[in-house]
Length: 585
Image (cartoon, rainbow, N blue to C red):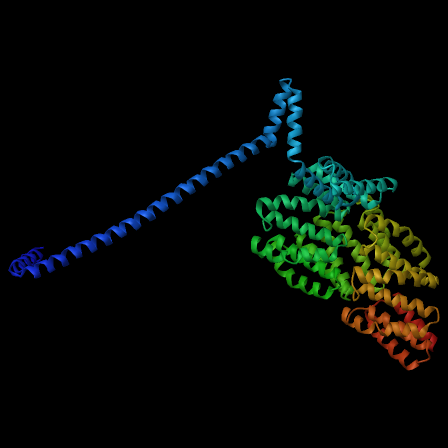
C-alpha cells in the first residue's frame, strides 16, 4: 500500500508540472478508465440480477407445481381412504346401525360403480385360474364368472366366459365323476382343511404317502414347502427335507422324469447346508440312485451306492436305518444290473437286521421280502419266490391294505413267479383282475400298470392266445416309448415279446428283422451280466431255425447259453433253450 501511495504521489507531482493539454489528456484517460470499469461492473451486476430473478421465478413455478401435486395427492389419498375396504365397511355398518339404510345402499352402489371395471377383470382372472385346475374347481370358476358378469353386465367377454363355464358345469353334472376328478377334489379339500399350517400339511402329506397315494402326498407337501420356504428359504433344513420327500413321492408315483429333476440338486444342497455326513445328505444320494434305477441306469446306481456305503456306515453306524435303506437300494440296483445272486446274498443278510431294527411287520421290512422274491424269480428260483410271496401277501394286506401299491406289487410278482413255473392260466387270471386296480390306484400310464399289461400279454402268449397277445403288445409299445423311453428295459422286452408273437404265427422273416433291430439298443441298455439279451438271442435262434439258417441258429443259441450261465437250471429261459436244442437234435 505504501508503494502504491508513493507511486500516486509521484504521478500527481509530475502531473502538475505537465502542460495543460497533457493534463487534460491524462484526466480523460483516467475518467474513461473509471467509466469503463463502472460499466463493466454494472453489466455484471445486472446479469446476475436477471439470473437471480429467473431462478426466483423458476422456484416459484416449482413451488406452485408441488402445491398442486400435494393437493392432488391429498385428494387421491382421501379418495382411496373412502374406498378402502375397512373404511367402507365401517361407514356402511355405521349407516345401517343408525337406521340410514337408504344412504348405505347409495354408498354401496357408488362404490360398486366406481370399482366395476377392476372387479370384472379380477373375477374374470380368478375364473380362468380356477378352470386351470380342471373339473374339481368348476364351482369356484362359475362363481367368479357370475361375479365378473354382474360387475360388467354389458361386457361381451364376461358374458361369453359365463356361458362357457356354465356349459362345462352342466356337462360335468351329466358325466359320472371320474377317479381323477374325485382325487382332485380330495386334494383340494385336504389342503383347505389344513390351511396355512405347515406342520398340519406335512402330517397330512405323510399320511397320504403311507397309504400309497404318492401324488396326492406330493401335492400337499408342495403347499407345506411353500410355507416353510417363505420362512427359511428353499435351502433351509426343513425345506430340504420336504423337497426330498416330494421328489421321492414323484418317483414312486410314476413321475420319474420330474422326480429325477427335483432330486438332482439336493445332494449338493444338503452337503452345503447340513454337512457331508448328515443323514439327509446320504438320503439325497440314495434318491438320486433310485431315480437312476427307474431310468434304466442300474449299473450307475449300484456304483454310486457302493462308493457311499462305507462312509455312511462309519458316520451313522452299521445298523442305522439309513444304512440299511442304502443296502436295500443297492440290492435292487444289483438285480437290475444283472447280478441277482449278489442281490440275494445282500438281501438275505439284510432281512434279520431290518426285523431287529424296525420289526418284522414294518413296511420297509415287507418291501425287502418282496424284492428278495423278485431276485429269486430273476435267478430262476421261482418256486422259492412263489412260497415267499404267498406268505408275504396276507401280511401286506393286513398291514398296508389290499390296494396299497406294495400289496399290488406282491400280487403281481406272485403272478410273475407262476408264469416262470409254467402256470400261465393261473397267472393270467390274477393279472387280468389286477389291471383295473392298478389303473384306478396308480393311473393308466404308471410304470406298474404298464408292467402289469406286459405280464398279462406274456401270459396270454404262453397260453397260445397269440393274436390277442400281439394286439396288446402292439398297443402297449408306443405308450412305453412315450412314458419310459425307446431304449428302456421294459420297452425293449415288449418289442422282443411282440416279435415272439409274430414268430409264433409263422411270420419268421418279420420276427427276425424285428429282433435284429433290437441287438444294438440291447447292447447299450443292458450290461454283460444281464440275462435279457440272452432271451433276445434265443428268439433269434428260433427265428433263424424257422427260416432254415441252422448256422445262424446255432450261433444265437450259443450266445443265449453264455448269457444264461448265471441262471438256475429251472429258469424258464434255460428250459426253453434246452427244448430248442432238443428239437434241433
